[in-house]
Amino acid sequence: MPVVRDLRVLLRLRDFRNLLAVRLLSQAADGVYQVALATYVVFSPEKQTSPAAIASAMAVLLLPYSAIGPFAGVLLDRWRRRQVLLYGNLLRAFLACVTAVLIVAHVPDWLFYASALSVTAVNRFVLAGLAASLPRVVAPDQLVTANALSPTAGTLAATAGGGLAFLLRLLASGSNALVVLLGAAFYLCAALVSLRLAAGLLGPDHPPGVVHPSALDAVALTVRGMAEGLRHLHRRREAAQALTAMTMMRFCYGALTVALLMLCRYSWSASESEGLALLGVAVGASGAGFFAAALVTPWMVGRLGTRGWTMACAGGAAVLVPALGLFFAPGPMLVAAFVLGLATQGAKISTDTVVQFRVDDAYRGRVFSVYDVLVNVAFVGAAAVAALMLPPDGRSVLLVVSVAALYALTVVLLARQRDVSRETSPRTEG
Image 1 (cartoon, rainbow, N blue to C red):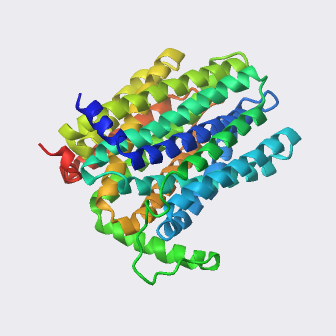
Image 2: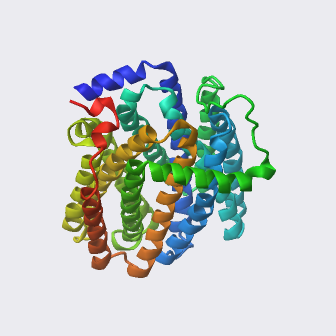
Image 3: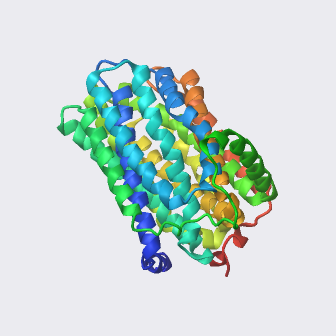
């Protein structure tokens, strides 16, 4: 199979393997940490969770660190990205240990959220750094396959980490603190593996005489840098169009995530542990969709182009979300989780490729930070909308139909754009 052959070629590249290992360990830690937070907020027996409470938790954890995204982009275009991966993961390991202590101490919720926010804030630097670094370790004609393997493998690692966290929590009598410490151990391993990459390998390259910014210059640099990044993105219309489509699909994914959480907690289970187990199965189904996307996306992009494949992903979701979701039953919803995992990850691989290929290296960190802000604000906005539409048991025909309509609108918007997808990489020609 061409995909398997291409993966073998990539895995022979030492620097790519090392960068991939950093991503796998880092995102496995993210999966562990996120499950610990979700189960603490949603599935703790003493908490009566509502859609509004879930939306509030997402806003607290995602919106503030989305505001940090622009700072991450400006600084990533000035700092050595290898150092960001090293010190970012070391800092997250320490902060995760602090979060574990706070869980054991039963501190007020605002202090717990502040600690969790500190971990996810650093996460912006690490994820944006990983995305911006990928073109430095593979050739341009390998980007589609690299984007199919690297981010998708990271997502699968996060899913596996989440599954391990589910299992550990069930075996350890609901010990969220122990789960958080497991995440801290993974962060530490990611930091150690990053040392296998040369300090200057991942860029960015600076002309002679460029001075690194001080912390006091961060605000001014952010404003100026984001303006420059947005102007650059405006000149790269293909990248801007891909980001718009991905943002809309992320909104749909966020709304359905809140609905799934409520269904697992209140409609499909009689206890918190049973609901948590169902959620773990749903996460696994979604992870299987991510894996399928990694296998089929390079092949589909070669035939449809990045734009055509994104349209196919959004169109398939538009049809299958109501066909499966309106049953509000575990079986069809698990199939829907697989479909949405495939569609969302397939579109993300295409979007990553377009952005990496069309955006100049000097601006790539800033543009990927904009990318992060857009998808996270969309996710939180979707949670807020879902909180208004969902009843306590999570069953809302209006929400499912509205999400399907938004997927269909994404297809319509992409269909009106000029197809430039076959220009994104020589791999897509022929």
